[in-house]
Image 1 (cartoon, rainbow, N blue to C red):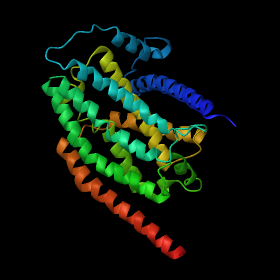
Image 2: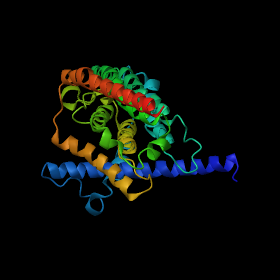
Image 3: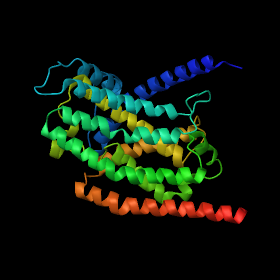
Image 4: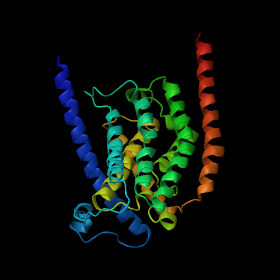
Amino acid sequence: MYSMGVYFFLNLFYMIVLLLLMMIGMAFLTLFERKFLGYIQDRKGPSKVGFIGLLQPFSDVIKLLNKEVFFIDKVNLYLYYFSVVLILVLSMSVWLIYPFMCNIYSMKVGMLYLLSVLSMGVYPIMIGGWASNSNYSMLGAIRSISQSVSYEVSLFLTMFSVILLIESYSVVDLYKFQYYIKFVVIFIPIYMMFLISLLIELNRTPFDLVEGESELVSGFNTEYFGGGFALIFMAEYLSIIFMSFLVSLMFVNFYLFSIKFLIVWLYHIFFIVWIRGVMPRIRYDELMYMCWKKFLSYSLIYLIFVFSLKLFFQFMMS
């Protein structure tokens, strides 16, 4: 039997390895997205740095970190930099729910912890938008707040439908309950709503209204440059990798260390990138209408349906 200290250091080692792998994966995800969008638009994409452009992400990071640092007038400097660090910390902290075999952090309330972290995602955007002292940044932050209030209700209700079915917040139980049948088979409407809600959570096309280059220059991160912009960029793509993992875990879960699960995971990453190349940005009022009048009602109906189904089966078995 290993002591608690050994388990702690094993868990810490695995977590560091996982984060390093995610950083490398994030770098090549940016390259894949640029190459894929290039082929959609009938061009090659990055191809000059290294063999077929494989070193392009590392070149971009070096370029961003070497940019001149200057201080913008009337910016709240501490909150300005604190917000970008907080964005990266939140995007990395969600990986604590990853179920390692010796993971002492694999909590029985892992999904509840995840809901808490996801609900905090709007705060660094709000802080950064306000601290930048820019109208464009502030408008992006305001959009982020109203957007999160709109979609998070339906997002959490869809997650609670799955949690109610397995009667557990544990990530491991999500795997156990999908051993014979995948939840995507019985939860197709929930799966589709959850996938669209994740696109809103990630601020990805067609829901990239927080950044909105054609309207707000770059939204909440308009005044960020160099290292600060690099941290925001890293956090965004780390979140894409994790959210793809989450939707695969909740609805199409195979053994976590199997090729099947990896294929499903990569499929959802590909879907998020593909959507950016084929969909235009929707209007803000259309997003509000969809979240409040469509998703909220459908997710509530499905939650009541799952609850009624469980009561029915408990009554039949009693």
